Length: 616
Image (cartoon, rainbow, N blue to C red):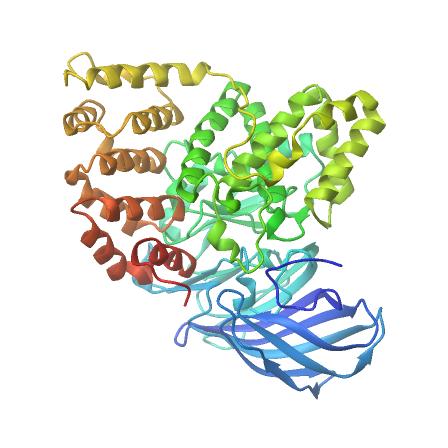
């Protein structure tokens, strides 16, 4: 029996193998309207119905071989939507393949789709839409079995207003046909099986520029040249991933730089990674996010979590491979430095949830819980640290890296659980290296790593070379603040720092906080931090100021949270501004006035954070 607490569909009776979408994009009504045809197969006897996941969809009809079928929608659940119950003409035996054609349209409440007015784009002339289906929002894009346990192929025919372009997490096929003088038809095909959360669509005034042998970057025309320069090293990440693992399977690896409201740093949609414009720092200091998203081509997209309780298999593995890639593209000191930075972020998230909160376990129990409500760095960084620790326990990379490749080869195209992963780890190590590796694995406290809340049970040691100067400078500031004498500091202190060293320096200062406002004033005067463009530095500087309740930073915080919608930045900044003595009203007012700017997922989470709203 397959278990997924986040789906309403009857996945142990029928499974989808292919979806065909025929949709028309209507910006006036803010709807996608058309049909979804599902090819399914019964995996049990006497199957008399199909139950699919939906949320905020208008289902018009369901038919099988052109014969209308009876259907109804169940009562809505708070976060999982409504089950679409379809009565089949006759019971099916196991192994029967059949098709269901569902006529439907999305609604303005469909959380997977954000519709942008021209004023919300860079060019200000054309509307734009993009989708975000992870974790369980595909059900608000189309009726489906919205679970990562089901992997399927899909093709799509998208009719969009001319002169806009459609892009999908698939390969474009055929000619772009004019339907009439107003619309253009784009066709796509994804031949590699994927879970529903990786179905993705974007429509806008989009132009592309080739940046590698298998990569094109797509953006609005106004930022195309900047993006093409910023992401010109993309092929290095993919090629290094191939050296570590298996040949890249998806054909194309394109990037789409989305409008500012995109709520994540990146989304690993196959063939078309979505990225935030906050990565366009002008100096390539933030493009290592692409190493993360490219790593998903193997970890998550090829080998997929069975359900969201095992999400760390997607993200912990991806972070681990990302840092392997960075270690080869840059050096091991750089990748270790990335792990040091992330350890602090993990601690912050666990402090926010509470160290005893069961949602901070690597393998949480999510029955009745929206996966969005437990989103944090835990599956990413606790997962990474577990894999890093295992690598050390089994004797280092020379033993672990052959296993990484074998792991992908073993589970490519499958959805797995933590037990599947662990059993293969033991099998591989004992088969290839003998019983001593099994004995080494037996020494790991698996229960503490996988099921206990809070920080990892082991604090891994990483190379401190790049961190040393950051820590020393922070210690000098911590000492100087006591007598508020800052004459010993100058811009030369950080002139040789790379961007991530400035990040760590500010993280260390945050740990020393709250600082006296005289120290904040001196930091800004000497290092000119308020005017920095790099979003990671900007974010940390504003957090540091808010912790000190430094009110001159308030307008800069408002500017930052209203010019981009990346949840990594906007949620903490809204929470902190809301928590200051004189900033609570400003935080609420700013969010309410700009709510429509944010993606529905982000808006819902911010409203929970500062308005105490529950899911609507």
